[in-house]
Amino acid sequence: MKQQIQSALENIYISPLELCNLNCRACYTNKTKNILSNQQILDFVEKYNRFLKKDFKDTIFYDIERGDTFAEHKKFVSRNLKLKSILFCGGEVFTLPDFPDLINTLIQKDIFITIITNGTIDCINKINDPKNCQLLVSLDGPKEIHDRNRGPGNFDKTIKFIQHAQQLGFPIEIMFLITKDSYPYKGFFNVFGLPKTYLTDRKMSLSKNQLLDIKKNYQTFPNKNFGCSQLSLQSSGIITGCCESSLRLGTINDDPATYVANFIKSLSKCSICQKCNGCCDPNYLCGYKTELNLKNCQDVVQSFK
View 1: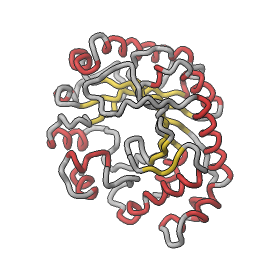
View 2 (view 1 turned 120 degrees about the horizontal axis):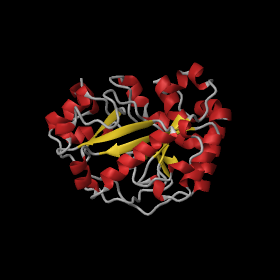
View 3 (view 1 turned 120 degrees about the vertical axis):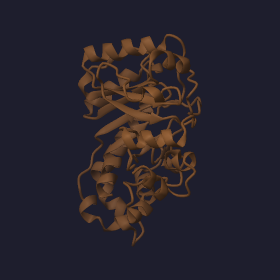
């Protein structure tokens, strides 16, 4: 858990907006009109990184109640931490005209960037340092299935985007959404030999056996043992412990000590259980408890083994 906490603090998630240029049938996000400006994000990053480098050790011992499991990790909290990477998602972040400017500024601050995108808006030539900006491009299967979900012509747009990104030298991975339609293609859908991470349909079109097959036999996000928790700044300015959790830890305007302490406390039950790598919101657990109709998170983890 000590390593998991450090990773969660040094590698964070930001959703600048929820709006998108597509209207996918399988989309499950709430399309609010909130948008974080570049300056809001840069101010947040600067404040948060300054906290990690200078104030983290003292704040943790001050804020966490005596007896809390993590209060004993003196070796862990005395380490020098820094913000290493940010994962951006939306909505579709490339709908923001000044988004490449934000990425260039963050990379100059020695922060590795990962962007989840549908690959239909190609402005990546404006990103100055491709090798330090990974692209996770979402596809829903072969052309017919993809375009049925995302609209005619979008598969070809995304393939051209991927080819352009390869030419420019971006690290690329495919985010393969598995629905009842794309499930039959799970084993042999291949795009230029690129690595794939499988996501299961949040609209629950998969059967229980199909979902378990994906989780047991393929590389998925989250992985089989969870532990994907990371501080997540939402477009509303609310900070949660993962990109899907509704468990509020603080806001963009709070002292980082507040939401960091709340984040570590949210993992305290998992540090005792240790059946998996932990979750900031085990009652939710990426929706799997509901999808599989299981009574607790331990049953979910066991079903994936």
